[in-house]
Image (cartoon, rainbow, N blue to C red; front, side):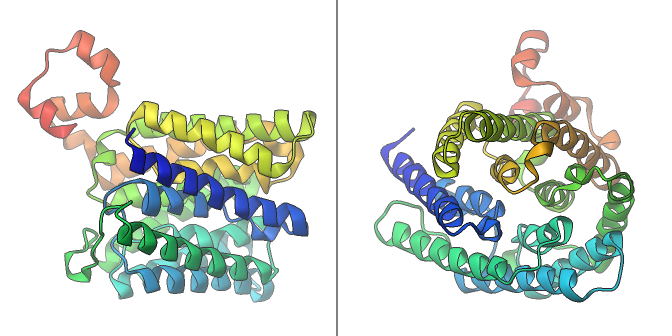
Length: 336
């Protein structure tokens, strides 16, 4: 790890610790926004363009999406599944109209719907943290701590017709119906929905690593649940100390894996905001949800059953196994 990246990691820990510390100090869980950890990884730590969006639009879309989620909880007469669909439709329209690719706005809108959050503290927190996020990223670029990222909406990698978003909506409704009516809501936590949209829509290289992404998501859920239950609930550590230790370990894990995936950071933070009696079951539901979302994305959107054998090997056979069984080929190397 180079020095500049280490500095960005340290600032990421400070930002996450600040968010959790303020929440603990004021006794306001609504201040905690797990997707902020994913945005920190994507906008601060990873030294390349992750999402096609300008800084003012980050603040605008994140805040508007958070407000829309609160309005749904407060005023919508419809059942939970319908509100999930309405939330997703709204954020999809925002992305389609603005020609941006900040998929985490899906989480900003859907999180209060799933958790029943109705306090305006939540969108105020999202607004404040979004401003801090883009301001610090701007400072990083000015000081040479981060690669300069340009924005060009005409080069958006997510060029999809309205029909694509309608299919995503239908897929989400079908997947969400079971946990909604069985009460296993962590099966569809918003970072998994973000993962589903990213895999179904993006052309990024992580789509060639579904097994690795599944592994990273599940390990992140296990780490989040373990630290929250063991350090905070059992040993009595403060939430801010718990989260700092958690993300130190998570960032080390991400560096070891070598292929960062932003939604994993949000997955790790969610155990802090759910009822504590459900924390130990959280990783199991995340594993089931991740497997389902990735399966639907790979089969029905990417149509992986049409891929060449070499492509399938790269996607579904871990590298340490593949390197010992199969002879490398030029095509496989290109897909890495």
